[in-house]
Length: 600
Image 1 (cartoon, one colour):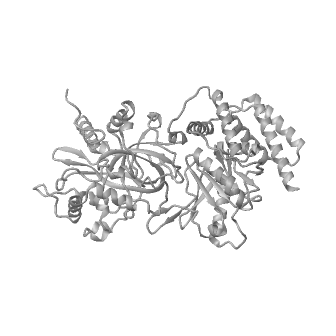
Image 2: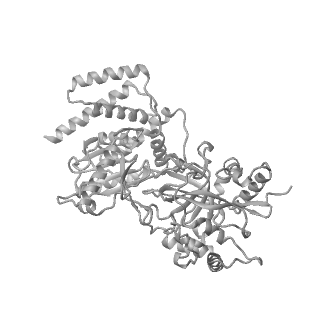
């Protein structure tokens, strides 16, 4: 039996080209076969999907990180996990060309592997460019799961909408692939640069350069162990990928030597006609990945050992009890604060209706001083970092507000989106320490930053500055504020005076941490519904509550409903119950009593 003429890991382009040639050979003779496959898969992605997810090949695919970059070879199969930080539009490339009587393809690569015949028939195709960064605030415990992802969430990928064209991409591809009759690269400037670079630069020297410079980009930062990546997307609508989404991309790693050469070295006038969207992303700093398959990730995908329990409520109660006990100890045996913190950690934006973000639950713990925050605040942020995959800590001072760049901004000279502190992935947790805040004067930048933080907290939206206009982007960020008194900058949904009774130093086991991470990720994603009978009972309960307390308004009752959803989820249950509603009412009574006590 003859083996495959290609290797999925070491020679993935072999599979791409063989399937293309077979598809062309079997296409109708009265149509242009290359035009048929523009923006479509001809069976190559199905071949890789079968290898990766049916035959267990995914575990063999290396990830792009600081260590693997030193030995990864061009044109091999790799994967990369990161956040979409910028959308760079579309670029045109020679997707197919006719070599004699046969059609060949350049899809999933930067250059043709063979010489491009003079005056040959070509097909211009397009691909979408996205710039991806390590997820901001990704914690060190996060590891990539080796379990096979659900094929329902897996897609082949490209952009089908014409965007900004890469500078000279069509002519660049043609020039780079022209060879002379003796098989050497032709005399075009681009071809000379390519040949010279290939003869002098090895994979190891490229990766060393990447390690030296791969994280000095202005586009955002994350875990320094992971480089940024320029991903080229095929056969997928542009709307499938959105800014700040977290994806895993599986595709072909390439090195493009042309982009490593300064543009002033080119004599080709075509390079002056088009804007190059990747001019600031040389491959010596940013690796390329031609995407075959991508999937959007959620929190469970970042767990090292995802668990599965049915029914959830049976095991959730035990894990809930142990997590609450740990949070209570971390918070100096303040059981009420631990209860509210758990609800806060389970919150997420379930829907956005006009200016209302349904499901959010920001929390302001008051009573902290600089001394106490160094003890309890340090313990609290430490445990949150161990429980959640993406976290950020901000010490809010007058100088920070006046000087920090919180807002993402478009640099229209370069066409790039410059990341701000608030360009975050959905599900990120942000802890803000206000205990170092002093009186003073806010600059215009400080006023803007305070407004941005307030809008994120209240509306779950971040305003992006595109120079000539502003655009609000939806967010899903959990905000916890630690302050001495009620924050005047960040009016949280809930304010609770922190009342520790002792200082306890406690460490959790790896097994406990893994169970709590699974618990938070799973319970947070549970859907919640209200049976018709329960809906009627809740209406009666709300009317009765408003009669008992005339100060209750719609906003507070809506928050009680959100908290009832969260406490139901904390027990692993998907339906409202009157018992959970009563639990929330009791928690709120205790919180208000503490507020009154502290106000005396």
